[in-house]
Length: 120
Image 1 (tube, rainbow, N blue to C red):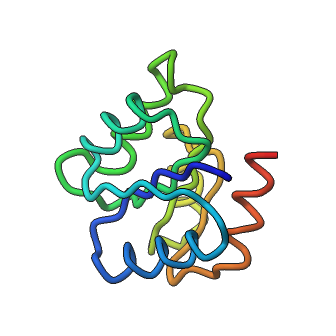
Image 2 (cartoon, rainbow, N blue to C red; image 1 turned 45 degrees about the vertical axis):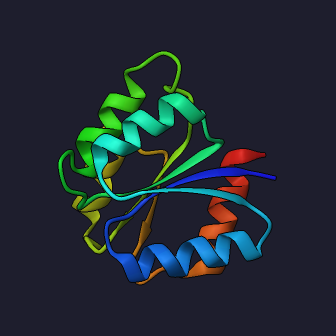
């Protein structure tokens, strides 16, 4: 069972994604801001993080940078979840330390494929 940290501040997206991931057999931990994402990543050491880039307190780019520069969490793969769909947005996410990029609305089979690739 893959342990997934889902950082998303939109309650509808959070609910939909967490349900789908649980139905697919994953353990899901949810947070609603970037500061919580950093704290929970350090405490839980998930197998993968799904990071909304538009989070409050710390945005997804800031949270990703903190997670990736902390030795205990630096190897955790992070998939950026974002409505920003331009090629420069993808590059910005990867430059911040994200390992993969998924646009919203979420294509769930595509997201599952990316999770599988990063956790195998």
